[in-house]
Length: 183
Image 1 (cartoon, rainbow, N blue to C red):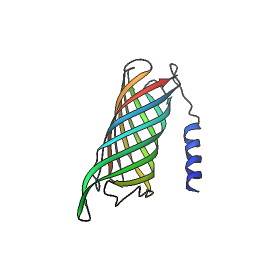
Image 2 (image 1 turned 45 degrees about the horizontal axis):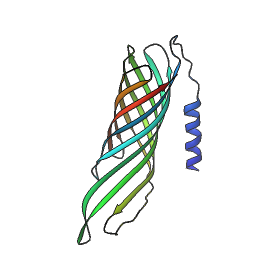
Image 3 (image 1 turned 60 degrees about the vertical axis):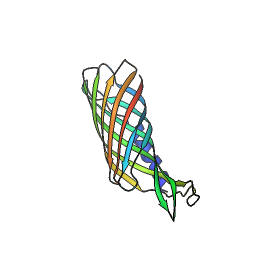
């Protein structure tokens, strides 16, 4: 039932028409990939990557609204005592998130954004080389947070950026992003 509600909310979120008054561009389709680091209060942190899509609806020449769906994968590797044996223990998080990014465009090159974000944890898995844990999949709950973005346009179709996110489950993420734009 939760997945059906999530899919309906996503469909309404992405497909909801926004009336745009901009004369130059009305909508851009952004495909974004990010690499970076994350930190979780209980397990530390290490690497993160994300893949996202969002149509950017221009409200005027300086402001736009970009609903976005994002898949995040975060993984760490820690040396933890497991029983009397020290082993390599890895914890992985997989989230899918929705954001409503309000973006301010400074000229044609620089864009800053602020977005509330709701993420649903698909899985949280633990693995160990000592055999004590083997794909222990624990479903996660919802995570709510905020995301700050900064983008720099290299060309009409490519952007480089930075994203910072902090959520209610104490997950912090910082990613460098590359976006490809389709008009």
